[in-house]
Image (spheres, helix red, strand yellow):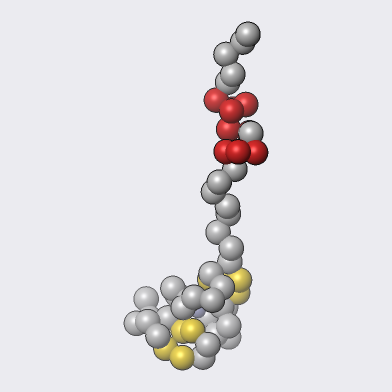
Length: 56
Ligand SMILES: [Zn+2]
C-alpha cells in the first residue's frame, strides 16, 4: 500500500468544506463592488438602500 499524498487526500469529496465566498454586486449604484448577499456592503456600508455601517 502506498502512502496517500496530501494532494490526493485533499481532493476527496469529504475534504471539500470551504466554499468560495459568494459575492454579488453591491446594490448601491455609486459603489457596485462585490459584496456578500443579504449583508451590509463592506465598501459603502449600505444595505437595502440604507446606511447601516460607517462607510469605509
Ligand atoms: Zn457598496
